[in-house]
Image (tube, rainbow over all chains, first blue to last red; front, top):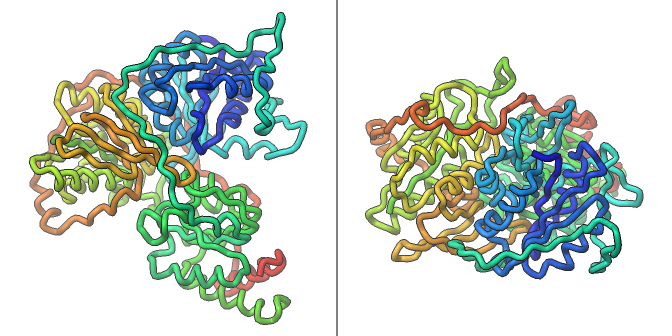
Length: 357
Length: 257
């Protein structure tokens, strides 16, 4: 097993753009920061994208090109990626814990005979050993897992690693001095330096694959969430509001603010209390309002991924152990149906006195 | 059609829990273990397929200690025809790679048309068991499925899986296949009392994990700890009314009201 670290880039044309975050994670994982991270880019017509990624510092790119890779397909991804990764024998294979990453990474790990640790938020290095840290039990607990030697496939929960570095601005440097890749710049293909420099992009062609699964394409969803992304204040409902009938209380709280919208946790949409388009989270909307009021939301990492960019987070929940309190600025351990009427009354009183009460 | 649903017993996330002295497992009081919520959606989906395809049997399978048979009873109370318990003694929660290998070995050469599982377990949230099992069995697999339709002849499934930003992806898989089901695909039924009573007498086949080939263990849990709050969180004190007044003042200071 080598010390190399591999990253598998996200498929083109998918809504998640997590590749750069995963590269940053992989670079921080390196023991020797002079060794570049090997980024595998599966797809079709990936030349421009491969060269773009290769411009990031400390990155070399292996493009894997074939007509079977024109769109994401778990079978094709595993079949195309396993041989070159097995040949490289990287210590870690880093993948975004996106819809696609979570889909193919565990199977790839079985195919390669490696460890597999998913939805990783950070890592800890003790000497030569590396352990990975992730959430369990709806975010109430933290689990530290160690690969038992050999290679390990690691999926990185989007938003969890990047938050430890400044989100924007020049001269960024992450932990361990790892360079953080710049934002997406205008494509400037084929700027690869010629001459004696190390070749930073290689493209492997693969023949057409016999696949059982057929990808038919993405289905657009009607977007009713314009209010959600434009709102200054989001009042978000979790399963802890008790029942659909209590949504009216959240609506009344929202009405105390001038530009507010109602949001929801996955559980609330699953129960059919609110439409799916109002779901905030990794697979729902990502929001960053001035104020996010989480009502009865437990705070699973998938929900936090969608709202932790909020300027101010107020959490109201009767479970003092709820994970939402870990990210809240202000926390009230209260029963919502009793507390919200008091809060609405207090807010209205202040509005009633011209906002200077 | 033969459908297998993989189910897991998990601690109720709202119940008080304790971490074992070795720091590697979590336990709750006897009555606070329950069927993983994501798996309830998978059981429900299997039952709906059975309603559409007569001559279908639904079996529920779990891996765990003796207490885990409760989730098989729950699945049967919902309507599953039989239960299979891969009995793995011990309170340590096995990692997904081990679980998937045990299930794959237990299936052996048995023909199944469809395997369903929840997209993840509520406790360890890894989402690995389903796609790993598919890989062990050489089956096509789709995860986070939000809709499925099996063609009338029962040979192909058209599914939609959940992507980011509310998008979905459509795909077709020939059966046999494995699908992991995302929450919200359906509303799991509440077991009727008559089914609950019947489930108590339905057979559960027990397979001793120790008699299956030793599964690989490629990672280990180092420790499980309680999450700390960031330290910047201000927990409001006082009566409910005082907290409400404080919060309203805070909104006003931030010029939000």
